[in-house]
Image (cartoon, rainbow, N blue to C red; front, top):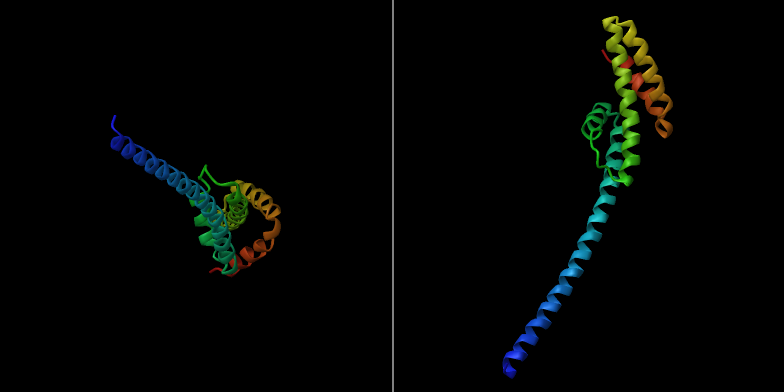
Length: 142
C-alpha cells in the first residue's frame, strides 16, 4: 500500500475513534439525565399529591389512585409517595362508600366497609388528619 493511502486510513481511524469516544460520553450523559428525570418525577408526584391534599381534591386523589395503582413498574423513590397517596385514596373511597351502602341498606356491605375504613384510617400515618377532613366533607355533602 502506498504511503498517502496509509495516512488517509490512519486519519479515518483517528476520526472514528474520536467519534466513538464522543458517543460514549453522550451515552453516559443520557443515563445520568434519565436518573435525574426519575428523581424529578417522584418529587413532582409528591408536590402534586400535597397540592391536592391542600385543596381537598379527594376526587382527584382517587382518580390518580385508580390510574397508578395498577402500575407494576414504579421506581423506589416514587413508591413512598404513591403508597401515601394510596392510603389516603383508600380511606376516601371507603368513607364515600359507607354512605352508599347506608343508603342502600346493605348491612353486610356496611360491616365489611367499616372494617376496611377503620383499617385504612389506622394506616394513614402522617396523613391521619385527612380522615377527619374527608369525614367532614362527606357530612356537609348534600
